Length: 156
Image 1 (cartoon, rainbow, N blue to C red):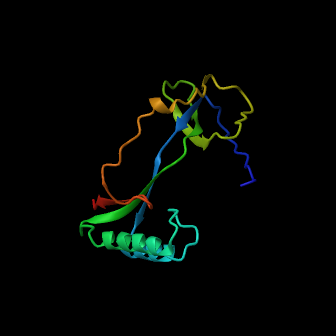
Image 2 (image 1 turned 45 degrees about the vertical axis):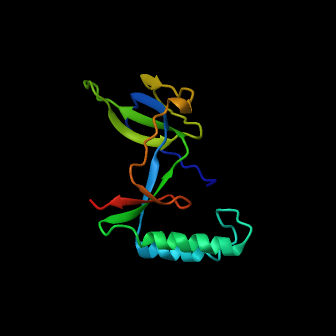
Image 3 (image 1 turned 60 degrees about the horizontal axis):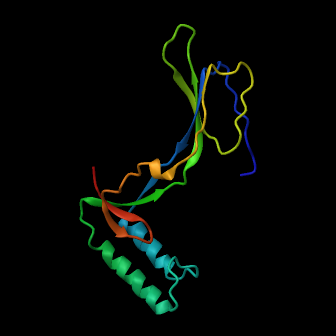
């Protein structure tokens, strides 16, 4: 959004740590919801795959609907999407006699961060992001629908 709120803190900040964050978003979807989503995609003019014929699109969606019937009873559908890697900042405070820091806040740092008042005693700067150095977690569940990133995940 175009609004950027100013956040304030009454306690002095001891440490400011910038870092890159990459995580996945998990959304649980019921089988009924999945069926509705797939049915609605039949009329979606901007279909995710660029098939030339509507019949091919409808056949693909029908196969996706059939796949839902093969999900074991003790599993649920989870949509797992990877977020874009973004810079974040953690603000830490420390009591006068303390030896350990206490986290005050975590913020997205895609915009400049300005701190007023006493400068922090320690700043961990943001370093270059090297994707090849990042260890991405493999999704250890059965893929149900590639187009929707739906996985069959055992119930806990």
